[in-house]
Every structure is written in structure tokens, then in C-alpha cells.
Length: 621
Ligand code: ADP
Ligand code: MG
Image (cartoon, rainbow, N blue to C red):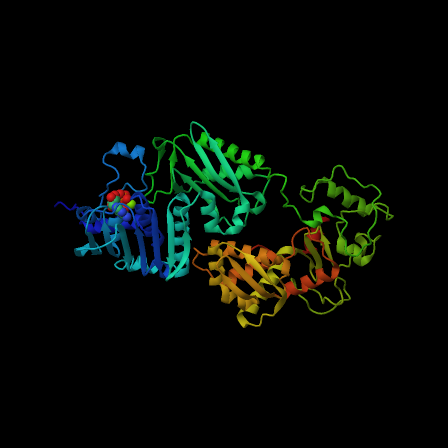
């Protein structure tokens, strides 16, 4: 058999390498920014157009390159940063693989202008798809300017795979944040489509964080500081009460390199345990310094994963350091997340007058206990058996029932389907509500009502989510949203990127009933809100919306209206634990069964179950 193995031509090898190094415009941004930092730049400019698809340019005032180096820098495995294998274990630079420029030049149009310190003239070089178009001597400032145009011009499949400009820009901005946070001592300018989005002067870390995430960030930051033989930890964590629904502000840097580490993340999470709601995420900016020889950053071409020699020790130190800061800065007592009024004031029944309980203290009452624990069961038992009104205090199992049918009635008065009601209503359809209308609330969680064939148990929160979801969807598609004018415009502050995100979905928000006076910089001025959104909830709704959009943004089926309607439904829906009066119960049931898809919540969870008479009969055999 003839020999068939051949060495790949360089430009093909480069294209293949590019597949690993350059996934999207943000990857190019990362590599170029890191090169500028490695070159010792004091000021770095990042210029981006159309989500990086049209242009990515990085201008630095660093060391620059000689004519030969300028040419060589585009060769694969060409690097000035390591010379021998041992150097890998004492890396002090961001780059070392010598792949980035070669990869980028293989899949884009690249133009470089560079001049080293002291040289009179610099070099101007143009490369397209690994082919040198020209190289000339030129008068240029000290440092390097590298522009990348038409990314993936020769790989249409990759180009088509790119997301919208808005999504790609978001990835770029994330990358920019990471680099800028790792280097507060370098000034950064970031221009998007011709206007300056960030101007970050050289500063300390706290100032850098505040410059990026907005002035209200300052009060959130709690310093973290620890030095051991294994690791030096510094940075900030956000106070627990500012934890957010979005994962947004979570940053680990190891030796000034941004890394992702689920393991270390877990260490921080566990330090926050009990201080934040389970669905919230703590914010942190943590900088770890370790001996370069004790880590391996070469396990992935994008270098965002790191292997530590002694992960377990690091975990323990990190966890206790964060805990220590939380304690030391006295942030623990400030916690105030269980504000669900139903858990704290069990007397808040709508239909009852306030009444002094005879036994004021229940020593076994545990507000954190799951409903359905022994205590509640005891109450239920007592309730079913009591004859007087003596101890009808707090926990009522059948709230709606009680208010409707009187306090001394028990199960016998429940109106199950009677033969006298006519009309051919089939399984799953409710009986004519006006006439029958028996609903009751079970454990502040379910609404129970009868149907022809038996009964339905409805999850109140999911049902309401479904109702609201369909309402918002409808409003936004037929554009008949009614908004309510606020008496005083509401001014809310967010980080610049969050404001940008809101601006991006402004049309959808408007269609649903929001009215904005201004969305710019770090603030948003709201002058009108959809009818069903209470003014006090606007901030929460927008926060949640930002979180949800961030999460969705990478997904294929990102529909703003859908995300928005889901967010509003989730945030505004009645929650488990809320007591509903009979009128609300009934209205909810009516609204639910008028929905197009009453069976499932907007998040694809079952909304109700039916229990047929047959099912019940079987239990009695
Ligand atoms: P690496 O960063 O891994 O060395 P790159 O392909 O990113 O590989 O860059 C190749 C070389 O080009 C670098 O080692 C460096 O010497 C030079 N270089 C790249 N960008 C710059 C820059 N902005 N300023 C000065 N030198 C640069
Ligand atoms: Mg590099």
C-alpha cells in the first residue's frame, strides 16, 4: 500500500488550531487584550463594531515589536514568552502557547501596526487567511495596534453559527470585565459602535469594581484578606443581602488570570450557606496568588481552567477566609431574607378580627420547618375535632372553607358533585362555577375544587403563573397593554451592562406596558408600569428580568417576549404560603381554566391533578 500520511500545510493547521482558540469574537478580544498586558501596556483601548463581527481592535502602548518579530508573531508556536519546557512552571505571562495570532490570522483579515521603544519607524502589516497582503515601514506611535476584521470570513459555517450582535457583544463585554478586573493598575477604554462604553482609569481594585459595576456597588463590598503559605487571598465579596438571582458578579482570579472553577465556587457558596436564599447567588471578586509551579494552566487552549496541586487545602482555606470576612464585618446579623409575612404573622387572616391568643407562645413553632411537619398535623387534627372556638388560632388548614362555610363545619359540609346539577361537563372541566363554586385552600399551597368526575387539586402558584404568563404574552402580541402612569417617576440604578441589556429589550418592555423616560448610563427612569405590576415590585421585576435574559442569551430560542412574560409571571404570581380568600381562589380557578394550556406552568411543571371519584372509591375498599 502506498504511503498516505502527509503533513498538513501550515494554513490548514492554523485553521484547525483556530477552531480551539477562537470560538467567537470574544475569544479574539481575550487574546488581544492579554497580549497587550503581556507587552507591559499602561493604557489599552478596545474598539468593537457589530458585536465584533465587523471589527475588533486593540491598541496598546506596550513594548511593541521589531520588524522581524512583527512578522514572526503570526507563525504558529512563535512566542517570546517561554523558551524551554521548564518555563511552563514559572509562567508570569498570560500567553505562552504562541498560537493566538497565528490562529486569528488564519480566519480573519488582520492588520498590525507596531513600533518598539526607541525605534524611529514602525511596521505596518496586513494578513488575510494566513496570506501576507503587504508589509511596509510606517510612522506609527510606540506600542501595537491590532485590528481584526471579517472574522471567520473563510469558514462560513462558523460565521453562521455566531449569535446576534447583541449576544456576541455581551460575551465580549464579559471578557473585557474579566481582564479589566484582573488589572486595575492598567487604564482601559472600551468603545462600542463608535461610543465609549467604559473609561476605566488606573485605580485600585475597589474603584475598578465600582467603575465597572456602578456606584451603588461600593456599599456591597466586604474586603477579604488572608495570607497562608499555600495561598494569598484578597479581594471582595458582596454582602449577603445583595445576593442576586443572576450569577453575574462571580470572579476568581488565580495569579491575575480569570479562571472558572466549580470546585472553588462551591467553597464560597458553602461559606455563604444559610445567609442567602437558596435560589440566589453570592457575588465575589476573589484573587488567589499561588506558586506558579503548583498549578497547571495548560489543560485547555483558552486557559480558563486550572489544575491545582492541592485543591482540598485551597478549598478549606478559601471557605474559612470568606466565612471570616462575613463574620468580621458583621454582615451576618443584617440578614433579612425570610420576609414572607405569612410565616411570621400567622394571624393575618383576611376575614377575621384580630384576636388575642390565649397561649401566646408556641415554643415548638419553627418558622423554617416545612409545612406538613408534625406541628401542622396536630393543628389539623385539633381543628377537625374541635367543637368550640377556643383554640382556633394560627395555622388553618382549610382557610377558604372556613371563611365560607362557617367555623364549626367540618368535612361533612363539603359539597361534592351532586346529581341535581345538570349540564354535560366532562372530566377536567369545572362545574358551572357561579352555582357551585366550592373551593378551599389546602396548606396555603393548593386550591381544591370539585369537578364532575371527582376533584381537582391546583397548585396555586403555578396556576397563577400560567394565568399571568398568557396574559402578558397576549398583551405584548396584540399590543394592547395597559400601563399605569406613576405619580413620581421611579429612578433605578443598575450596572452599565445591565442598563444596556434593558435598552436592548426596550421595545418588548414597552409593548408589555412599561414606559421609560430614560435608559442610559447607570440608571433607568420608569414613568409607567403594566397594570398588574405594583410600583414596589418594579425594581425586583427588572432585576429578575436582567438575570433571566442573561441566562437565556446564549440559548437558541431566545424570544424576548417569552422570557419577559415568564419573568413577570414568576415574580408576580401568588406564592406558596400565601392565604387566598374565597373570591380570589375562585377567580384563580376560573382564569386558569380559561387559559390555552392550563395543564402546565410556563416552566413546564404540572399545574393541577385530578382525583376521580373512582380513585377515591378504591381507597375505601
Ligand atoms: P503568546 O501570547 O502565547 O506568546 P501570541 O500568538 O498571542 O502568542 O503572540 C505571539 C507573540 O507576539 C508574543 O509572544 C509576543 O512576543 C508578540 N506580541 C503579540 N501581541 C503583542 C503586543 N500587543 N505587543 C507586543 N508584542 C506582542
Ligand atoms: Mg497571546
